[in-house]
Image 1 (tube, rainbow, N blue to C red):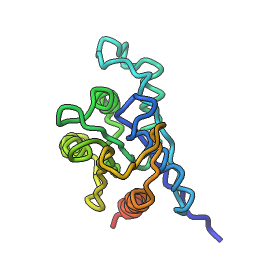
Image 2 (image 1 turned 90 degrees about the vertical axis):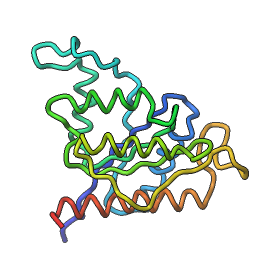
Image 3 (image 1 turned 135 degrees about the vertical axis):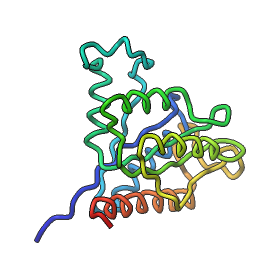
Image 4 (image 1 turned 45 degrees about the vertical axis):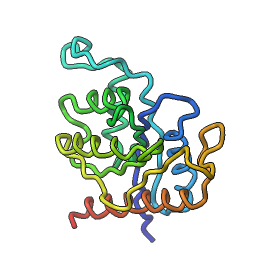
Length: 192
């Protein structure tokens, strides 16, 4: 009996804060991944990346920390972004990571992705629109549905004091996003 392929999902958070609600969404997705056959989610830490400066590219080589990050992106089948909203857009650390991995050759190209976000007001939704726009140039293929935004500050509490997702309904919605990302990735890999 053939084993089912494992879809490798790289989870990338735009917040560097330890108790970030967006990092909490990714931790929850990793926990929930055990109930979805055929996937493995790896959290990719973007905090060590230097600010993009092409002077750091020497003889076509990237700094070791950047090359290690690029290899993780290259080896992933798809991406799960957790994107907080800062000033109606994505965060500087996330944009920096995106830009490093888009340097020649663009290691994001042709791969599927999904976005989740937590925050106030629109729950980070405006950052998702900007990330989708960036994805057009990167040749990323975002799932359209289900969408996932959560107002982290509206009662009842959705997260604990450590930034962990505690809302059962939100966990089910998050699981649906991961399942949709897996299904879309398989469809693209099979050329359908």
